[in-house]
Image 1: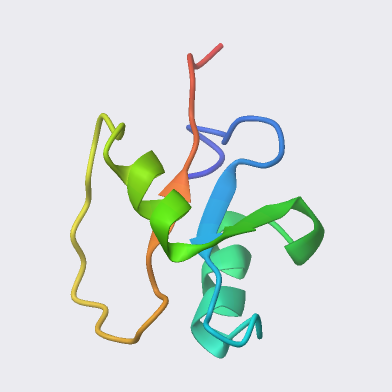
Image 2: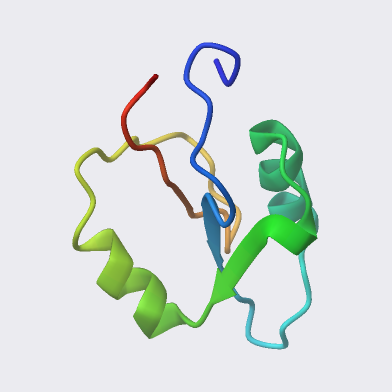
Length: 79
């Protein structure tokens, strides 16, 4: 999918920071799936994460049930 619709320049992935600021296994998996590393991922606090989510144009609901498995992907115009 990323080869067809590449993400925007960094930071193109936002993850909700865990309570102790540790990057969890599920977050590492999300970064790997997006082809992005921790250096180009923005970790935000819970309230900021929800504020950004309110402005989303598309929401995809998956069956993932682990905590902190929410992600914002940023994509503008495909060139």
